[in-house]
Image (cartoon, rainbow, N blue to C red; front, side, top):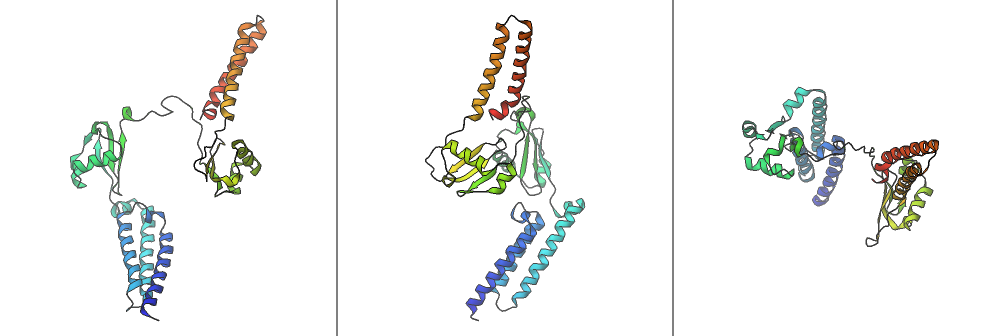
Length: 286
């Protein structure tokens, strides 16, 4: 076999083996790496290059070395999962850099960070004022997470006493102009329901590049034709307006009648409708 062809074959083999071994190691190998995973990644890359280019040695020896490194890496991950002592020994420990708006200089020195570098990391988190910070912690991966003081945190629906309906992951029901049946089944809907939604928008399935259904049952679409504006469905706003009108009518009837029983009936109906409107408001105006 010519040398150039041997290099091609060995490289292709190394790529295939490396792909499957990386899949075996899992997602952590392609995300934030721990110290040991960082070392493993470099070594596996070097071994793959050795398999491709070192034509003077047997290529299967490189595969054996790869298999050993992957086995060690998997064993180390399992050990870290089961033992906190092993995690503390193999990974860096997290360190508090800022507490109650004050920099902990000793911890900053241990992590070999300057105040300029710390402030740069805080600005990446949209924090420009040190006094606003409750905690800033450097994680074992080297990233810095920030917790603002309570008075500097954005208001949430819970702070305002607003009941927000539970959110679910939007599911893609149309992709590349094709209907996906499995997500529709998970939503408890049919192709007929989807077609009805598209007809209200004046669209066909073939017009849609991507269509998603959210936790409220609303369909949003991205069209192949980017310049076409998709009309918004008005079903929920119309229903909300109708309920509000009915509640107002019941209140007006209770004020206009002189019959005590009828007045009480209209007042009760008005209260019930008001409670219903308040409960459904997050769904109908979300």
